Image (tube, rainbow, N blue to C red):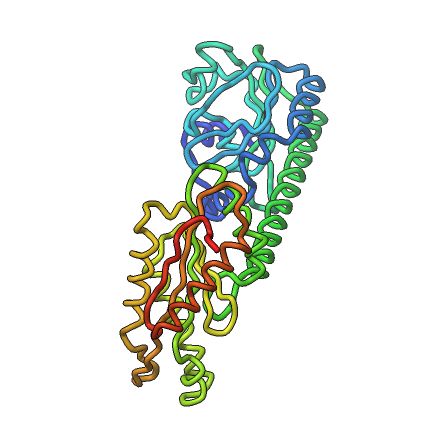
Length: 354
């Protein structure tokens, strides 16, 4: 950069034209993950030795702050974007060297220049996540005036390129982890209702149950079975039956709590697990609301379709209780509800009696 242009750049806060995309790229890296990468710390330490400087750092320029991802030498705890020189590196996308900060009107007043550690010179190279997408700067600072020759500038650029490669590696790891999580979630989710499926019993429910009971809190479950669902399929067709199931899932969600765990066991059978189901009358209250929610006919293509609900429920509170035994209890309670006329609920006493 020519001297007059350099001075103009250093005299104002500049926002890159692609700032929105740049900030999205910054978020995609994952601050906490890269801050713990030993390779970046090693890179900063190596740069400090190579350039024999007081401070070397891998920095990300966020919306309002300069984030020190890894640093070596003089410790800098925090720096706003407005007080950072790295922001200019990000804007220009090229190496910026300031041989003497005290001679730059825009830099001479900075707190780390006028006060401790009294830095006098700065050099920074852009760290790009992708071509044209600069997320930060690899910088070095001295406590005395210093310039960099062409070879040293190339070397600083190489350090920045390595930091960018590590950022990309971390982003790839995060994307792979998210993809794996999405696949795992899809594997335990019923596509019809959005509820969990049977695979979630061992993947999710058992762990939640063990944690709840170990903490001394009750854990409840309710079997939900739609009355006359087979007749709906026979009379109106499976397309209508599928829509009834989707709407039924919505009604169940409208009654249960955000932390409860609904599963579709198959067909028109659902189970809802209640971590920390609270007071003794909590399950009867929820069961009554669920039964009432199904007494309003479903409206499918303008046609009212009646499908009531029968429920069996129970809760346990002693540590070591099994999910299988709990489900056996609520299954028997459901049978009682069906046998006594349907469109009702039965809540069996806690701790799974015979």
